[in-house]
Length: 151
Image 1 (tube, one colour):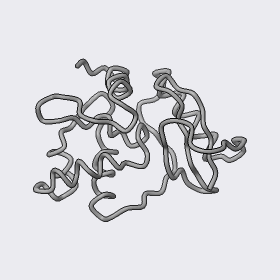
Image 2: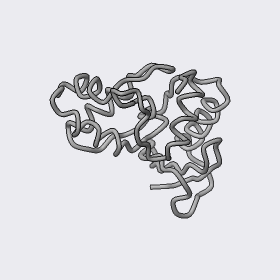
Image 3: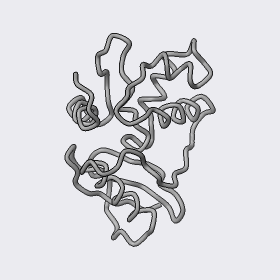
């Protein structure tokens, strides 16, 4: 596994990847960074920069998800939320075919291995409150506003 850290408008992001897939996106510098000499690394950095500059609304990066069946279903449901829209945790639980597991779905959202790429910032509370985010409340608000949401 390789890692690369780089700056974004919401702070340092570290991507972890192997020779074929993006594996994780973490907030902050996570360990030593390698030189980005891998196509997955280059493409991920390019698409993230395009997203932050307003030139990309959807990511097209090969990634691998590892988790329980519920977690993978939740992450796939979150990945399907269109740019500029939001969903509640209950809507995500229903989309993951487990409408009664709202808390479990919320926990899976919080453990999303690829925030920004799998847009868990688009998941909000039923009350309209933005809720928690692994990158912090300010980062979540920034991402929502970047996509045209007003809170």
